[in-house]
Image 1 (cartoon, helix red, strand yellow):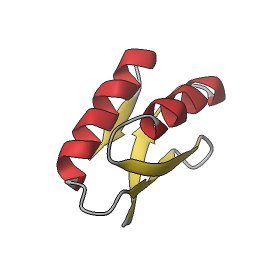
Image 2 (image 1 turned 135 degrees about the vertical axis):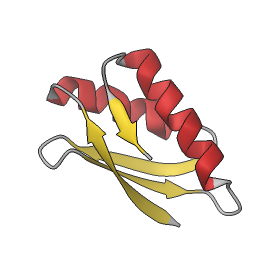
Image 3 (image 1 turned 45 degrees about the vertical axis):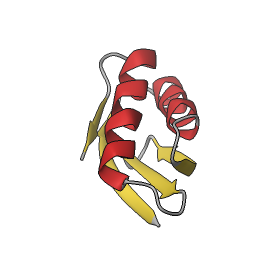
Length: 72
């Protein structure tokens, strides 16, 4: 399953950090961040709890870039 989320991030480098953090989150098969569109696309592993995984993605993104936001 793939879903798209609106994000708020200040620079392209920060967006790359968010993408890397999202990819390393358990339950995420793949993730990509488009800085210009302020969107994050996430592909989930089969059987993953989407809501719980996205809470972890948000938390992991905040660890690498404290002023970013992922709107769930």
